[in-house]
Image 1 (cartoon, rainbow, N blue to C red):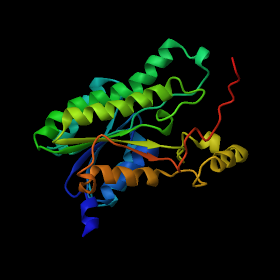
Image 2 (cartoon, one colour):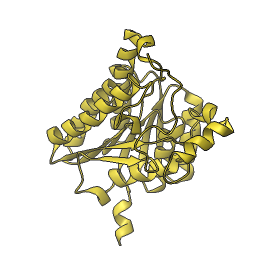
Image 3 (spheres, rainbow, N blue to C red):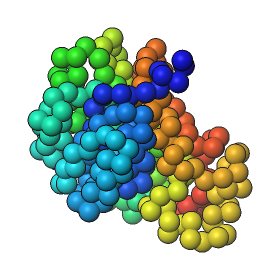
Length: 262
């Protein structure tokens, strides 16, 4: 049956920034379709909650709390996967983020940090995990970028540039790692997470975002998780180097930053 091609039974996935939001949603979805997990984030309590859900789904989760901005932090995830499960089949590079702001107010350190947090982290974990994936002659890497990495808008010189770089890293890695390992990318639009709650708490702003979205709603973590299951599974076995926009159909930011002309 076609549904069987979406199952991840017996596979092992590493998911970064998995304590909440999109990362937690992806980890939970992977468990529901049969995968075991290594989940990483800063906060142990959040990871424990996700691990409990994974256990309720009949799968296992190894939670690794720590700093994922360093290569050493990513190495701990890979080491735990091999020690606990003896294999790595899927890597989800979800760690990232950066605050928007005017170009002239963006400091060099902030720009560098956006690149490191959104791009270098993905480079590090992928490079560390790939030798173990090659040992099995297969695997799937999924990078979580952003809709703002596909088009330009005010206020996103750091974050948007970093996510655009992650999209291009996806395409380059897909070429480097073919034919054994597939590398794809999801570019979410505005998604209901704790990070967006401050914005969604303003009814007028939320309605503006909805009105600017062709599908007239805000995305959910389940929307993104469904795309991740597709890329992780055999359902996408003939797909690599691609970007899947899960953004309600937007072609520009659906919330205009209040940044005046220079």
